[in-house]
Image 1 (cartoon, rainbow, N blue to C red):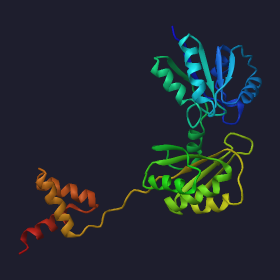
Image 2 (image 1 turned 180 degrees about the vertical axis):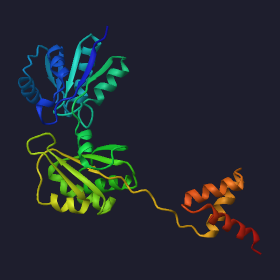
Image 3 (image 1 turned 90 degrees about the vertical axis):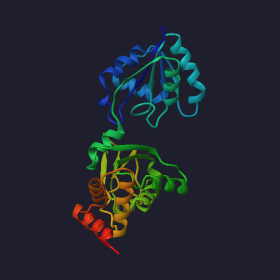
Image 4 (image 1 turned 90 degrees about the horizontal axis):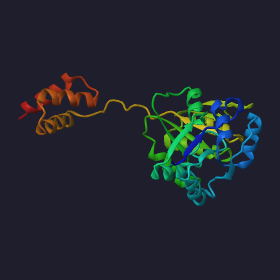
Length: 281
């Protein structure tokens, strides 16, 4: 029998947010892989948990080298608990390599759900949350960062980013350039902690605010691109599109309706354009 890999969500600020199962899993784990063993010690003390399992460090610098060791422990039947400094392992934190390696060996992977900076920031941002995408951390180099932002400038879903406080002003300025100065956003700082702050407004205003200096853990939520308005097409282009659809097998009535919907125009206007073109000399 192989063991089980448990991904444990940890508090993003207030330790009282720790899920009840976290304490039980910390006490039961035979191996605990922690992004920061000192933070793990403070967490277990705060929760009143006595751990008996072997504790090993598992962070970005040793993730590749330590993964095979942990997989072998899992293959041997151990229950391995993975915890990062805050939030869910593998979400912009160590964990993906271990999960992928465990899945490849057909080892069970489960999770202790916990607080999430991504979902918490979305919930308090005041921006649409029905559809969103998480972009993680942006590149540190200015050119690469701007290029990445321009790639998603037309994305209509709400965007969520993590950022370091000392790069926040540059990132917000780049977002204003790529997305437009008036695009709405929210900067969520120190979520669930004593000095929690959510600053909302246009990107240009947030960039000016951040230029004065900001501290703490940062999550940025940016409004998606606006829905495109009706296309401004002349009569010749409307007729061309109708004919293209007819040649593809659509009936004229259906083609006219489809082109009218694309252009945001009444069907009568497209129909009149088609008739006029047919009757033209």
